[in-house]
Length: 274
Ligand code: KIV
Image 1 (cartoon, rainbow, N blue to C red):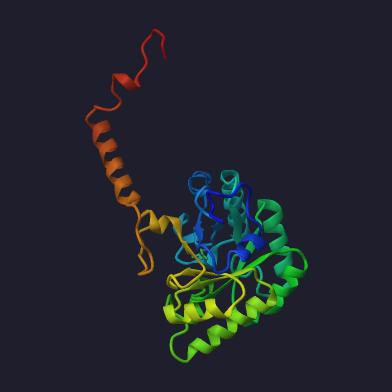
Image 2: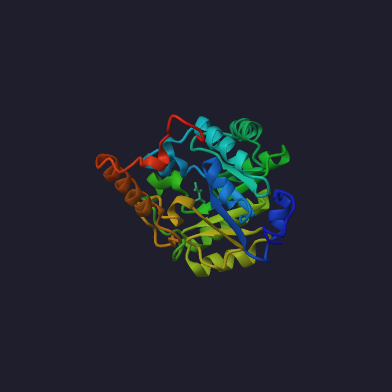
């Protein structure tokens, strides 16, 4: 079912049921106005920990905190009436033990109203995923390039090439068997993404993983051209809001210095109407 035809917010099971059908549409969001813009068009919206890099200027996602995710999660929730909201678990809030993961996932869901959480990792997170799902926390998994592990992955590299393909397929099967309702595949070769998608009973959501996936996600600031620190190959820019915005600010500065803004139409006289 398309986002525009749907009347109520989907649940994780509805997203799972979209496997193999019309591609699932999703974007990240961090603020109320952005969430409002995408609500009618997306099946789910991810409050990604990319917020740390995109809005807070951090060099990676490693410095993102629970407090940041809760603040932005609550803002996004205020802008959504129909798309499901998923919130990322920040680095070091779930890896230590299933109990640590449950404590923080429950807090994220309770304080933001999220319908599900997302966490990074394959086989080594399977036990935690099972623990969370058994306790009422729907889990979206994230494998391939997992940005919280850039220091052990050696940077933002494509994952699963050559001999590493088997290992990534095993990760995909493990998170699916553990009970995840969907899995993000980031920066995975197209053929492998197709193989994983065909193999799993749950939807794959691709970012840099080709149209073979069951759905797609992009960081909204990347696709709108608002974030320009770097542009991965998998990003398509649908707008140039960053350069357009800077041009608008330059015009404003010029007009203020020339005293051509504000004009009479932006000013008030002694008399009404105001
Ligand atoms: O944090 C994020 O924005 C993400 C997406 C890139 C999938 O995890």
